Image (cartoon, rainbow, N blue to C red):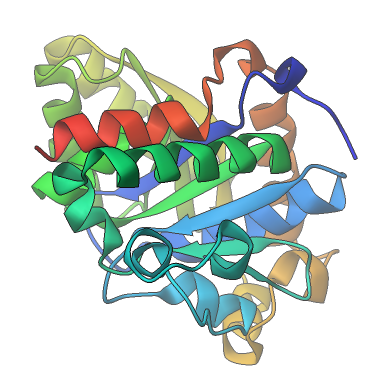
Length: 273
């Protein structure tokens, strides 16, 4: 088990996209599993309400959600659903909607539970919904780091840029990390990133960082159908190798920026008021 940040808190990273169908949840799951394989403690906070793909891709069904912790007396251990791969799932349920209306006692309870999470995990990956709804932007704004998933398709580029534009407008983040998914090859992935980078540099006050790309790969489809992460099912596949490179890039810096799960939910409560 690795100790990162001197227990200052888990790295909370929001993974989001401008449109659906770009493979966001699949990326989240495989990132989480690969980080776990490297001896990091990882949880996925499933904030994609009504589209709980992360748990499906891991082949598990959470029994309880954040709502059960806040209002039904369940403890934090009960709402953490373990997966066979070692990743834990925290299902948002509808609990986050009530964050703005918590009384003093409930806020204290939430704070105590979130402090537990900061000590239990090194990474918390927040799987948001797609688009620029208030809910999605709330989760993205509350996280310290953001990964935006795009594909080479023009609609994905347009919607991804729209999302980044909103983040820039409200000064939510000064940098976002970009992953190009479903690229034909490295050249197409690089062209896609450069197109986004060029437009962003010209019109927005926000930086985009190239975190890497995932190629079109039958192993990805096979993993989805079998409800097993492709990083473990087909570790020698091109997609798995590239994902490993993305993880290398992710863990190579910014650990000092982590402020923890408590800070993340504190921001959420303020944003959802």
